[in-house]
Length: 123
Image (cartoon, rainbow, N blue to C red; front, side, top):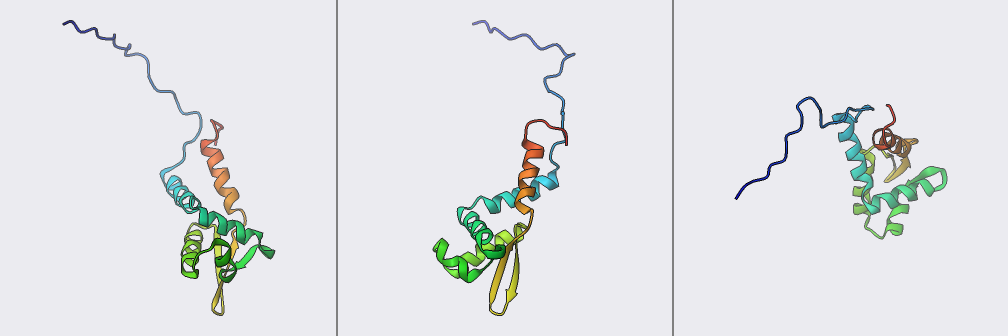
């Protein structure tokens, strides 16, 4: 049985197209992935939205447990993830912790995505 082989491409041409914009660095990709991982949870998205919707953009953990239907320790765990991702800040007042959305944090994430995944604009 004879084999029909495809011809080899000429050695003078490249199969790859050149970069037209700066790609995201490994460090930036790692940091952005951590932030997106924090945002990828529906409970965390709700908590972020609830905090932002409170007067002054600040909410006590005691105000967040009932709307998400979870226990205070579980809500605190989710809030810790949001703090570590740089999306909210935590301030302890007496026995309660108050959380505030970091100004510009979400805008920074969307800008980073747009800059590196938005379809070829120069960085």
